[in-house]
Length: 173
Image (cartoon, rainbow, N blue to C red):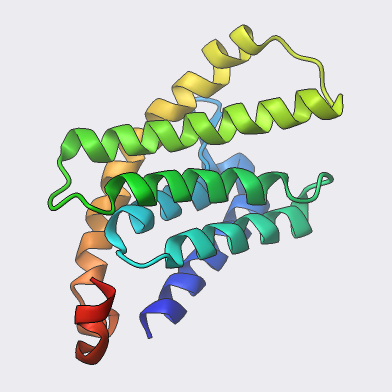
């Protein structure tokens, strides 16, 4: 049941990110809703399902809204995999780890995306200007909102229907 709920949450985030993108801006900086959902999942979940959800979310974003297939899928998968492997062995996550994970995932996603766009020759831009105007403020917004979504997901994971079955709990960690 937990995987169905998590998949539905990720699907809803992808649809809202594509259809309501202008409404999801804070001071002109767009909020990356799928990444905002995937980072706390990668931190809380002890199985590899957040990485699979990240790949699926990126694939859906590419399929519905992108002209370059695989770009969002690669960026989201790399960000979720990095957060998953860094936080997998942590017993307790503190404020700075959650905030830093949100910032790091956003920076990684945007820098990989900028590298792909530059390598393909799709867009010529000034990286320093883009960092100052969009990427760094977006990373800070993602880090702050990541704290809120992390708190919401800790509450959600405590619900009875989101717990792992007791039979598999020892095997999965």
